[in-house]
Image 1 (cartoon, one colour):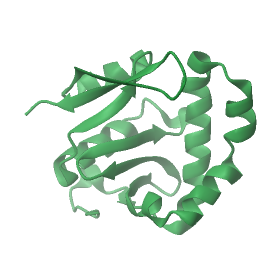
Image 2 (cartoon, helix red, strand yellow):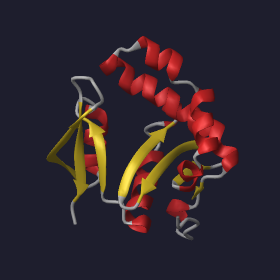
Image 3 (cartoon, helix red, strand yellow):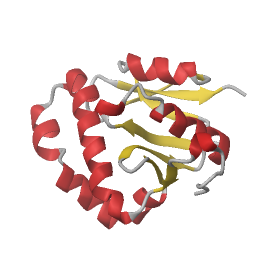
Image 4 (cartoon, one colour):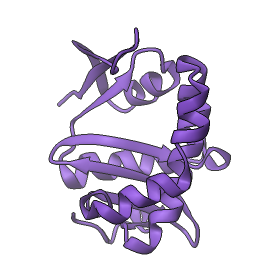
Length: 160
């Protein structure tokens, strides 16, 4: 991944490193519980299976997860984005640092520097849909069911 752009807007964005695995896992777990538990309400998954140690193990065994990730780090890793090709796989900001422009900077970096132009979003995650729409993405008619649930992921693409 290309990181380290001199533009001041992106000065806190860097490639993730193996030492970031704990922080990435922590941010991911908190966001999944905050944003997805209210939709799925599966206690066993969100409070037993989904844990920082489990996700750290995934990061440690699959180097590509770190290699495809960029972090926003101003002394503390406050958020990250993971991109594969032109597809945004994940974008999470530590909940206490949301609404500070961190997610926007990560997203704009991925779009302008990596050519990212598509992502899947949970159909009921209206907050995320509005965020992506504000940044030039639109909902398509492409949907896929989330495992064996009644929920759907919808493809969003970027205009232009």
